[in-house]
Structures are given as C-alpha cells and as structure tokens.
Image (tube, rainbow, N blue to C red; front, top):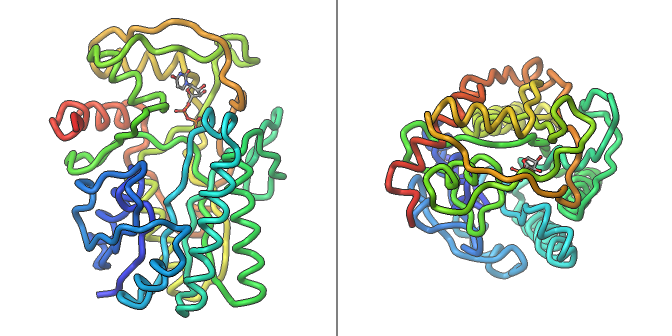
Length: 327
Ligand code: UDP
C-alpha cells in the first residue's frame, strides 16, 4: 500500500482526508505538530509528531515512509488572527510550507496536493470566481496561501514538483459516521459556533456585519461538505498518478448562502433557536465568495454528494452530539 504524507492529518480537514485515503487503499501518514490538531483524530494510519519548520524531522519522516505523495493541509487558517498577527501566518504557513517542499523534493517525492483557499481571490464585485480570476487577498491568511502557490510553481519549473492546488470555499459538515469532525480551539467558524450557541456551550453567536451589499446585508459564502472536499483530494492524487500535470481547481458548489440563511437552516435542522446578536464587520472578510467554476467536475469527475446546507449542518450536528466533540 502506498504511503501518503498528510500534514495536518490531526486537524479537521486532514483527519477526514486520512479516512478517505484509507478507504481508497492508501496508508495516510499524519505529520502534525498538534498545535491546532488532536492526536485522537489520527485514526486511519501512523502518526508522526513534528513541526513543518523542523527540516531534520521532515527528512527523517520522508526517509522512514518514502511516501508516494504529499497532501499538505497543515496551516493556520483564521482570518481574524491573521489580521492581528501576520508574522505568525507568514512564518508558519509560508516558511513551513517551503521547508516541507524542499524536504519533499530532496526525498524525490514529487507529487504534491495543496490546500489553498478562495481567500486568495479577495473581493471581486460581480465577477465569477474561476481559477483564472486575479488573486488579490484581503488578509495575511489568503496572502500566505497565494505565496505557497507561487512557491509550488517555481519548484515545478526548477525541480519537476507536480502539484494539484485546491482553492477551497467554505468547508463545513463532518464525517456522517461521526468518527471525526470539526473541532478547533478557539473555534471561529460559523457552523460549529452556531451549534455551540444552540447547545448553550457558548454565548450567542455574533453576526459579523449586516451592512454588506448583499440581499440581506450579511456575507455570502459557498459551503462545501468536508467529505466531498476530501473526495476531490483523492481524485487529485489519482490525477497526478496518471501524469496529468499540475492544475488548480476551485472546490465549491457554486451556490452562495448568507449568514442569515445559514442561521435559518440551522434552526430548521436542529429544531432549536440559534441565540445570536448583531455585531460589527470582522476585518478581512470578503462580501461574497462563491465559486464560478466547473473545472473540478469536468476534469476530475468530482461530484459533491453531501453539500446541501441541510446535510452539512445535520452531519455537524450529529458530530456535536456524538460525545467525541466534548474533548
Ligand atoms: N461569521 C459570523 N460570526 C461568527 C463567525 C463567522 O458572522 O462568529 C461569518 C463571517 O463573517 C463569514 C461567514 O460567517 O461571513 C463564514 O465565516 P467563517 O469564519 O466560518 O469562514 P471564512 O469565510 O472566514 O473562511
């Protein structure tokens, strides 16, 4: 069985990717520093603790497992924190990724799947966001991801590093079997915060801004189920195995929902009120991020199966109530 090095395999998306990789016949080797990840989320393959900035440790892990490919999820990913502490994002995300890429190239591991983000696009009024849309990120998180995309292109030109870049829209939901799910501390993402508020585990949700230029004044996002998202990664790995060359893919459904609409769906799915208050805008937030591309469907054969808002919230709700969530 082929080993795949999964950085951030103890995190939300990485742990779901490990489950999908195992189901597809690969051995996912998690590399994670456990700063934002959880060791009990590593259930589907070996675990190696380490930091992306530690080149010697990375070299050791590449030598031990000789992975066929890297799936690189490990990153800091909070917009608010990125605005307040940009240095942390440049150091961890960019320097860490550069160290990983150099170690992979030296080990001869030349297939690389990278988690990028629609936050690299920034605000574009009435423009369909496809993979050719100019990237003008509004925050250091998006800027750090765009920089890593550039590094990958340079390393392809110089060293033949083949890569698939996935620009995620908003990831939500959880494994329907509730073996893994979303769990950040601190939590900053809309769906888990709403479910926490419903359960009284935290204060009311603050809606960040109702004065955006959208029909109901709240920001619009394109939500994609984490299981659909990681299925695309397995397809991306197959794409590289088939020698198809480096490619960028948006991963979104093409449907946008406002914060108020997500609140309404949460109420409908859980049959409970969502305690919430209206607050000011959060710095660095784009008005609307919705994918306008069908490239992943057309070229990878990717079909989102669980990405209705109702299913994402229902799966997240099941995970919240599974007992695993209360670490
Ligand atoms: N949001 C909100 N209150 C919160 C967290 C998020 O109103 O406590 C909004 C946020 O402004 C954005 C959307 O929900 O419009 C999704 O935010 P999230 O942090 O989940 O993902 P992001 O879009 O930043 O990747």
